[in-house]
Image (cartoon, rainbow over all chains, first blue to last red; front, side, top):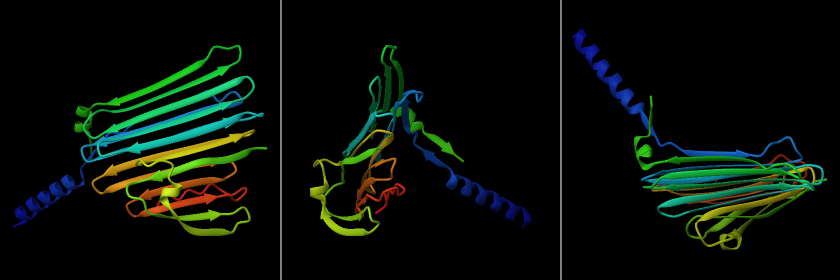
Length: 149
Length: 114
C-alpha cells in the first residue's frame, strides 16, 4: 500500500511538471542608438514574434535635443492574417550635429522573423558614427522554441 | 523652452467602432466623449501609427504595437514628450480608447488597456 502511494505521487509530480512546462516562441529584437555625448541623440528598437497562430510587432523611438536642437519620432505598424510589420524612426539635429535611428521589424506566421536597426550620428567635420543590429529567426528556430521548466 | 506637438496618432483594428476619448485639459479638468473611429483613424488598414516632435531642450517618444491571433487583434500607439503631454490610442476586439493629456508638468499617462 505504501509503495502504491509513492508511485501515485511520482505520477502526479510528473504530470504537474509536464503541465507547467511551456514552449516559448523566441522574439526577434534589435535596437540602435547614437552616442549620447553630444547635444542630440536618437534611438529606436523593435521586436517581432510570429507563430503559426499569431503575429506581433512593436517598436519604440526616442529623440533628444538640447541647445536649440529639434527632435522627431514616428512609428507605424500594420498587420494582416499572415504578417505584422513595424517601422520606427527617430531624428534629432542642431546646427552642427545630426542623429538618426531606424528600426524595421517583420513577423511572419510561417516564414522568418526579421528585425533590423541602424543609427547614424554625424558631427560637422567628423566622420559619421554608424551602428547596425540585425536579427533573423528562421522558421526552424521558431519551431524549436525554448522550453521553460 | 521646449515645445511639443503630438502630430498624429491612429490605431485601427478591424471594423470601425466608437472610441472612448478622455482628454485631460491644461487646467486639470477632464472631458470625455465618444468619437467615430473612422475620424480618428489615419488610414484604413489594420495598424497603428504615432508621431511626435520636440524642439529646444527636450525629448520626443513614440511607440507602436500590433498583434493578431485567433483570440483577436490589437493595435496601440502612443506619443509623448518630456513635459508629460501625451496621446495614446488602443483598439482591440473589446473596444477603443483614446487618452489625451495636455496637463502641464503632469506625468506621462498611457492607458493601453481598454
